Image (cartoon, rainbow, N blue to C red; front, side):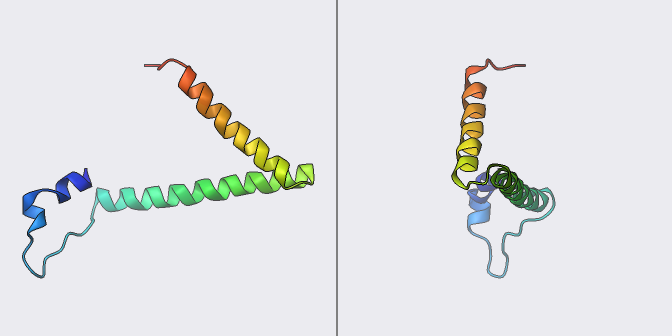
Length: 83
């Protein structure tokens, strides 16, 4: 929605000294997405470390994590949409 607003003619030709600033819900949403991405990356890394410690190998945990992500994607696309 932010990109649609920025493409409006009124926002394209702002007077000098005036700039578009993210505030309110838009700012909170950007912060939330950034922190969510960091949390997901840290979580996946922690799972990888635990699997490395369990299997004493570096490649097998990568295979397991890839199989889990692909399996989840495939099963999700095969299941009908639930309303």
